[in-house]
Amino acid sequence: MGVPKRKPSRSRQRQRRAYNSVLALPQLSTCPQCAAPAIPHRVCPACGFYKGRQVLTVTAGA
Image (cartoon, rainbow, N blue to C red; front, side, top):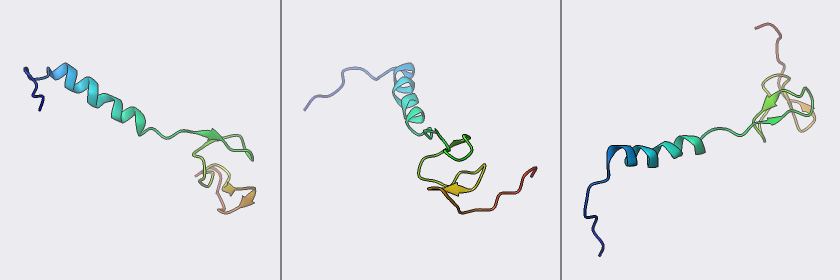
């Protein structure tokens, strides 16, 4: 079984681990109702619509 000859440097370890945070970012799309950025398959936080239906009542100026 292969065993590493040397310990990976701190910078190499951190470079490898830094990419995991990029994968966790939410991908945003635009809401077809109000064109605000929203996470897909979720209720739009700006207008409260999901699949063309009003699901939440959103108060303005909160």
